[in-house]
Image 1 (spheres, rainbow, N blue to C red):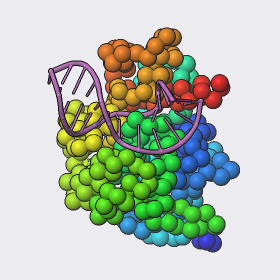
Image 2 (cartoon, rainbow, N blue to C red):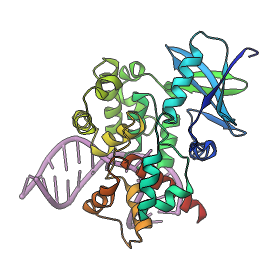
Image 3 (cartoon, rainbow, N blue to C red):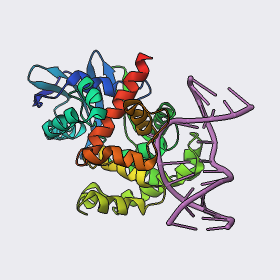
Length: 302
DNA sequence: GTCCAGGGTATAT
DNA sequence: ATATACCATGGA
C-alpha cells in the first residue's frame, strides 16, 4: 500500500463537493463505497481488474488517490469519476431555469452544486432500479447489500472490505431461488436474472442503447424487457445513460416532493405530474433529482 | 393491526 | 384500452 498515484480532477465552478458527498452519505447500508473523514473510498473494475481509489475535496477540484501503480488505472478512474459525478455537464441553463420556476427554486438553491450522481455500470443500475420498485429506499439498500455481499467480489484493504458489483455473467448463471433467499420477491428475482442474461449475452449494452437515438427510442427498447416499465426505464436513462431529461413520472418520491413544493393537500395526479414538469423539459432528470434531495432534507429537518 | 414504500405484470372486464 | 389483484418485506 505504499505506492500511490494521485491526480486532480478539475470541477466546474458550480460543483459542490460537500453537496455531492452528502448525497453519497445518505445510507449507512450503502455497500458500493465507504465514506470516512469526508473522503470516498471505492473499488471499481478497470478492464476486469479491481482498482481501489479514494477521492476528496481539493482547492482545484477533486483529488483522487489510486492504490498501486497499475497501467491505465489513472485514466480509467478519472473517466469513472467524471461519469459518476456528471462533471462534463454545464448546469448553467438548468440553474437559470430553476430561478424562474417556483417549484424548483428553493430545492435548487438549497442544494446548489449537486449533480445527478450516476451509476456508471449498466447492470448495477438495472438491479438497483428493480430492487427499488415499490419498496422503501432503506429496504432496497438492505437488499442490495445482501446481493453484493453474496455475489460480488470482495477486496480487502486497510481493514475495510470493498466490493465489486456482481457481474451480469455471475448472476445470469444463478437460479431464482438463490436470489429469493435474500428476501427479494420472486418476481424481481426473475427480472434481475433476465436482465443479467441480456447483458451477459451482449444484447444489452450502454453503447447499443445510446446508439438508438433519443430517450423515447431507448425507453421503448427498455420497456420491452420483462420487469422494466416506464419508471425503471427512465430511472436507467437518468442514472446510467445520463439523459438530463429522463422523467420517472410514476415515482412516489417525486409525487411527495411535488406535493410539498406545490403546497397540495394530496399527491398530484399523473397528468399533474406531467404538467408541472412541462416547463422543465430538457432538464427533468435534474429537476427530479433535486426534488428528491429536497424532500429528504426536509424530512431530516422534521 | 393498517398503511405505505423510488412499480410492474398477469388477468379480467 | 382500462381496472384490479397481487407481490413481499419492513418501518411508521
